[in-house]
View (spheres, rainbow, N blue to C red):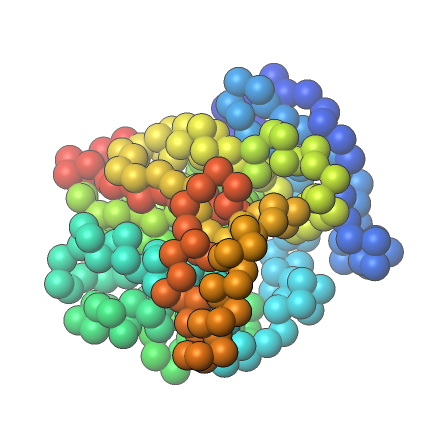
Length: 305
């Protein structure tokens, strides 16, 4: 397989360990491309990745037909809208953009799922034109009820899905780690953004020490594993200016919630209902022991890489 631009940018690397699959999915035929991989790590770039990477055809088929079933995501939009985790995440993401955005514009969400993020944009920024790319047909059908949708990732990454400088904001929430070539993909999104437009990017927080943790039982289906330093370098390599970076979200598995925080959440849930944790800053917050990394980046006003 020809090495992609992202791998060329971070060599040399070392084999860290075998790629981990959940024990109950190890024999799934659709996962053999992942089962044969090692996890490599580049100390210089501070990034890990699966190698060999699946080919594009295998990966596209996996996300179009298999991903939601195997990853327990065969749920309706009601599940995500009622989840304190997902609700807090989408409110936080939109809040980051609202601080720098105009009253109206055009927003593209790549890998939009069932559309919780765009529903949050719609409620908070009603003058904005909303667009989505989602390869899963169930997700695309849900999205078509309220946004303009494409479901062809190949056309998107080829740079021909939209004209240059089409959008004021492009978001990727837990998508970049699934892509074969993140740097090339980010450069394509740079092409689609208007000069001065913003990229909102979120990925799992996967520094070196966490990948070796006993609490990490599965890597599936991620291809890339980012530290804050590594993610910043990839985004800058694609031509963006970094405006804000944070480690945030819920606590990482294996990190105990303090007793007082657990008691407060339990009491507030009983008094005010199951979504009260959305107002609990200790539950979804910034901190080194949190699950996710987020970057807000900007395309230069001059628009050139």
